[in-house]
Length: 305
Length: 293
Image (cartoon, rainbow over all chains, first blue to last red; front, side):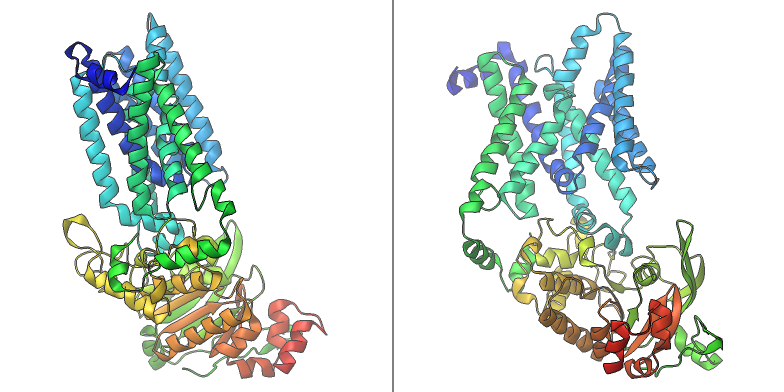
């Protein structure tokens, strides 16, 4: 199928679910790209995985009682995120152990709950691997509203997140409530996961959080650029993935993840400074480049990263 | 700069008295309350271990105080207790006459370089700006607040403070460079600029010379001396004893408690406190070095 055919299908009123799926996929991928920047920089990928899995019991319970799936997922994810943050304060237990225990427990609860619902097989597959069909208009608005809220929070608390990411102890000496901001970031990750589960599924949603940001990290040394490139990579990958899955009748979630992986590999191979190609660039050239970027004026200082 | 008030006094054979900042007259107590730093009876227990025991320490404006002791002596813990990162079991810490709480009054803390995520993709200027983050509020708690309107972005005052701090440490030309691309000495200067940004009266430097070559260490030492001349009070922990003897106005020997405090010349005149602090044996290389210092 050519891109023109795909565009025609997007505009076909009989296929109204397709543009909705595209909009939801692009919005959730873009939001995950921004949130994922801090997930990648702070080495929180495992926490992202835990939250993604923790959303599942909430979805399952909401499905079983015919409630709001997104709300159920958000509640379960936030509870798990808070538990991770609280239990990790115990120095006897490493954080990764706490996370592992909580996320498999959450996933176990989800499996038990969903299996109690008659004819759960189709629903289980829908939750785990996503589906582009049957996205109601209300979900569209929910994703847009939640996404804007997440981006606003990331913008408002950007300075605190940067200070904590650079040096947690120093941030504490500044009076920054590090634990509260950790919690806030976990909640934002949870919400980003919840709005993405619809299209990409519970198991693969971690790819939306990590892959675009990791790819962007290979391409730039600027946090601001990273936070712009990551959502762009996510949005383009979601579009290309949906196009490929529509054209060849492939699972949407898996296809988007494979496109994201291809983008990461391309960046890893071709990135001039950090990828494999960087090894062929003489060190003096790299130094010259970085010196060129350094600017002395206050104007340059104000432009920030 | 105050003269050395304390040198160890033998209380019994083979034993050296500890924690003995000499009794301060009442009038001096009042003056001490306004000192940049006054620590009295500071005890800290971590994980069941007594890390600090009745530490007394006072630092005046324009003074560079070296804190020297063996590994595990509690040097870093003293600094962390002053900035509120560890909770003391007992004792008081007064900064500018007030009990410090995180963020106020401004204490410039320079942690060990390896505590910082240097691969975080921000510029030197942005890293220094984190020294003002959290001190916000209208007008700023420190007088250099960074909030500008509802968007909570650093304002012109904050960026001027960052530029000034970078100029103080000679890093203005590298303001736009990613922190990941800095050398060890440049990183140390960025941490110093970050600490200086809120214009603190007191600077706490944790092992600033670690991992640096001699010329870079000397450059930093000169910078610390300049800051002291400008009126800052500085407390520096270090394992580089010769650099401390060369740079500091006074030195405190610490091993869980203050064993002795004095000027470098006073402390090198009597080596007993060094033997007590470091558990040195006769003929150790350190003793030989101290004798010729």
